[in-house]
Length: 259
Figure 1 (cartoon, helix red, strand yellow):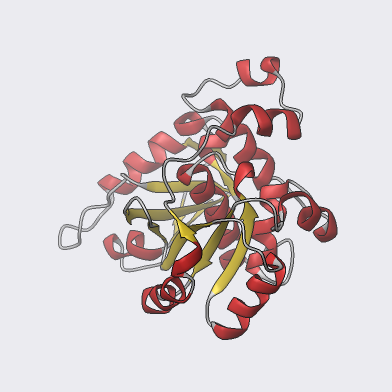
Figure 2 (spheres, helix red, strand yellow):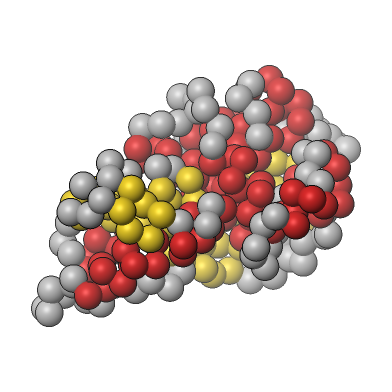
């Protein structure tokens, strides 16, 4: 038996957040076909565009993509992702979460103090800061955040806070202190704030710090720095058959971190 968890809009097609599939093994591709063909006639079509498919918490695109084999006892999460935003704002939706990436310039004050003050002012938002050079782009960030949010839903966070889990996955570290030292905010570097919560609260936060916000796009090319920092070799990259092998390796490593 394979368990399929449907998050956000994905569950509208089945009016349920969980399905049991009586299969011993099936590929991601065949599972999506099966789900599309299983939608009741009076329900909305099951849209497979703009979704993340996680197998036991690991993004399938960081495994074997649509050819990833799902086995008896596995848990598959279907996570819709909706894109939006502008040059200054990168906003997307993962399941029922609204997420925004905000680029901030170097600030004179202690950036950790800035982070803590924002958390105190907006206690109902999840707020984390990552040094910008550790993020390849919006899609890389979206996939890592998606893993953390799926872990929160499944009760498998690396820490007791989602924001700490996000930090640890970007750092590829199971040690909080190491993750802070590696990818956490520094006062002499540009950073990306990751904010999760209700949109009106995110809008209020953006208004509050508008004087230090920079355009979120385009992202600088951080590939060479990231490859060196995480010791990713040409040989390793050559083994990944995808359009974004570096991103896939980063996501796979982040997904398999254990407590």
